[in-house]
Length: 393
Image 1 (cartoon, helix red, strand yellow):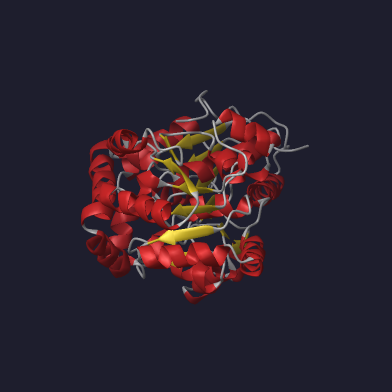
Image 2: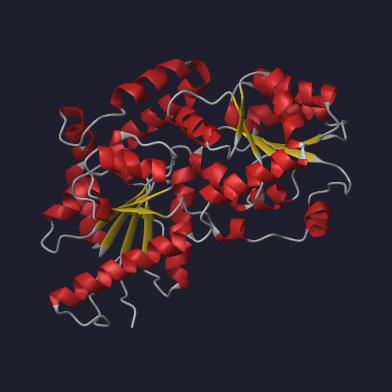
């Protein structure tokens, strides 16, 4: 019989990808009959003011001071948990975090975001709650590393090499890929998708994650270049960037080749009918596109983890990267070459693991089973844990 653990997934609203991975893991737990799953933005709960300031800095620096963010990222990338800065970041808010953990009483803690105060607390607890980490980028940063981690679930062999170089035991590393939600492992009927979104059969669509670029002039320049120099239509996703959506609506409302959307839960549908995705280099977004076999062009990746993601995946020929409008148009022409496109899809499949979340959950359940068996507790004995009733803390 499967154990019935209380699962705490530590996530974050930084960049949206961490939350998406947490949701994918939650879906796999529930598919296996494990319902006591709590997704908690622990840093936001423990330090709401500092979280707000940090998140605002992250978002604004991407637009106005990307090089500053890149310098800070690079300066801390080799950080070790025992360094003063590492100890500070991993211990911030431990007292408040302890109260949250005592309320939820997790049997397992899973990180999809590198705020690792819960790792410290998990080790300090009497039962030594097992802690797992799911790395959500294709480049390693020191903040992900913590000595109390039982196992790291990672996207590629390159990350494994980096962890080994950082002194992590090979037995504590498993290459699983980055988890994606169930919707990205299914292929909807193209005709139904076109009808649903008011799109035309026979047209070729570029899916542009417009909100990710922040600066409106850059999105406008991309749109103008593609419209003037190619025959592609564009679907522009503005996300929660309401100012961008209003501006583009005013400009393109009478242009049948441009379709402006705000936030949508149907990204997987739009990916399924698109020729390519033009986006930033967020690890989770790229992995979702890989799962849908959708070629990707990353345009002017931001310094930091996005530049690292783009460099790593471009080297593997799993994506294209463009640093100017001329390069963007050149990459679009290359994607129209059948052999080039098929080779890229082959490399995408080599990186992508569509069953990633299932592999991770099975590994965690096995670890819990072994730990419970070792402790001599029957696996089906109610533990009385998990006071919280909401799945999302």
